[in-house]
Amino acid sequence: QSVLTQPPSASGTPGQRVTISCSGSNSNIGSNTFDWYQRLPGTAPKLLIFSNNQRPSGVPDRFSGSRSGASASLAISGLQSEDEADYYCAAWDDGLNGVVFGGGTKLTVL
Amino acid sequence: QVTLRESGPALVKPTQTLTLTCTFSGFSLSTSAMCVNWIRQPPGKALEWLARIDWDDDEYYNTSLKTRLTISKDTSKNQVVLTMTNMDPVDTATYYCTRCGHNSYFDYWGQGALVTVSS
Image 1: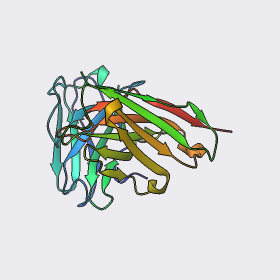
Image 2: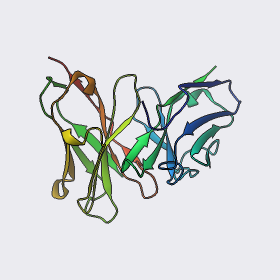
Image 3: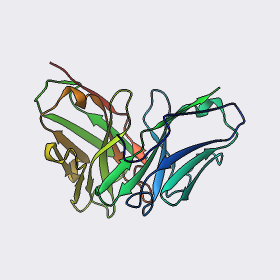
Image 4: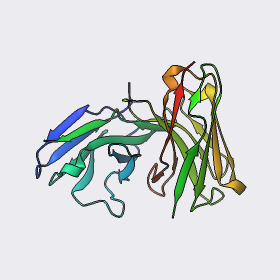
């Protein structure tokens, strides 16, 4: 069981806006920055969002991150078929003194 | 250009010790604030952070696996080594090494190495 809680699945149609949640606690998301990682089928995970809401070079601005208390969210607007992937949140946990991940959310583009 | 590549056995027997090597280029682990992590993903399951070693030799471990893990570095060879003792079939996973980003936890990832634990 993962320290950070994500819904196992999400879906949307092309062009739609989808949001994926990541629930943590005061020892992780509530007090440290979080990242989002995208894992496309058959590939290694890739950094998608860092420091809560920053995009690495090359990541479209359709992807955005936000925090509310000890929960994080990833929003994908203008959904595209190539966004079909697994998405993971991650944050440092002060109690565990290490990085913790969410269980991952499989995004399906219908 | 930053690259990382994992190497090691594809198959290990239960109770054996796994040794994985991460060979990287494009950065130096002797540079202040640099660090390298190991992460794994069992088939069909979530990512799990295992360990991290910093430029100044600080080490961090997943608390639930701490007694089985050792991470070390050879700065001259641009390598980080992870050993995991007493391997079990539940340790079957793809093992990744990653670089710590300046403001992210993992900015570059290796391609991953699948390790199967079976007799």
